[in-house]
Image (tube, rainbow, N blue to C red):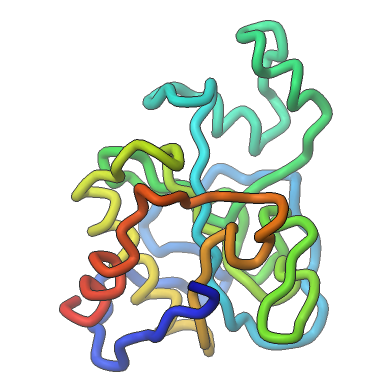
Length: 192
């Protein structure tokens, strides 16, 4: 699935303010961002992450996105030492949404990527990380939060498509993986 069709009738359940922040949401600033080049924000990229891999509920992702991860806390962390990444949003297993980068800034989430004739998807996309892994089903709370967040993003920006990280970087990435139910997600948008 390279581009997902969006349901035009979805209602707003969350709101993005003029500064690109989720109104009333938790915001933890990440230094791993910069100014966007001119142009519309037109794509949402869905990812997954868990730190350590396959473990949920800790503060590893938050620490990675804020460059405060203790590399000695887990053997896996040595493999990502020096990595400077972030996403705009992180959706925990319980549906909590944490924002790390204002939508008006470019988060460093997609890396080398391509979508509908354009390279460098970070320039024109919003990155949403789901706490999870390719082979573990996502939660009802995560789908509900993702539906509300996507609806709010569509109300704030001229979003034309939704893609998985695997769609924009197919030779490098597999997330959100086969455990992500695209039908459920997109159908939830149409019912929201």
